[in-house]
Length: 305
Ligand SMILES: Cc1ncc(COP(=O)(O)O)c(C=O)c1O
Image 1 (cartoon, rainbow, N blue to C red):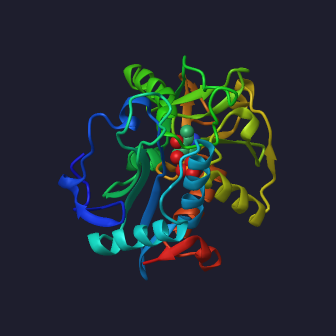
Image 2 (image 1 turned 120 degrees about the horizontal axis):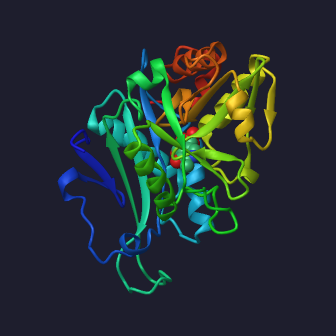
């Protein structure tokens, strides 16, 4: 990726991108033993603003706690580091990637005394699935790889190694010519996309699943739940079947990187009319206004730089 920003924050210091290297024997490189976040910063009339920064940093600490990784900084310090990163890189919008990773001390699976490192990088990144995806919607395939069960991995943690499951699903989807993968859980109900939560719309009501469907508890999902309440859109939270998906009038993925991406078809079956639907578009427009600071009611979700 060449669209990285010049400065990276590593263990408390800003260093040039090219100097942010780590040893090949780092524990995380071998075992995926790290946790990370994906955060977005948007251009607003009042300058750059980071969306749900505190919430992302809180989830970073929760993920680390699950894996018993002691982050050698306070949350406030990482929040400030993200703010300073945007300032120092002098950038209006982009994607912020904090990662907590083990360096080298020993090769055993237990990280024991491996040092815990923290780095925060920033990228000029637009919509994850492309601008067209937001406008026109995407094609999705049901992954042959099921989402891991929460009894094997904590699905609520955003941990590096856990993403091998998503990687298999995305590779399969792309090889088959689809834009993105949808994973079922071990019980065969819908879990989530490779990097997104899912919502359905049926008869003007919203449907999404919950933790017991083995999903990451997305912050964009939380945002949509709040917006549904504020806009009197009935919301149902529970298990989602494939039948419900194929019968839905609309479906969309949501996530920090994917924002609100309409799903037009699944394995060649059209969802609704095969175009972004009315409710999806309404929520998408509202979301876009909020992240760009145009909806004052939701300004508390933005950290202005
Ligand atoms: C597996 C998975 N599910 C859901 C999401 C959506 O989470 P959020 O809205 O917090 O970005 C992501 C993105 O981080 C993800 O990787």
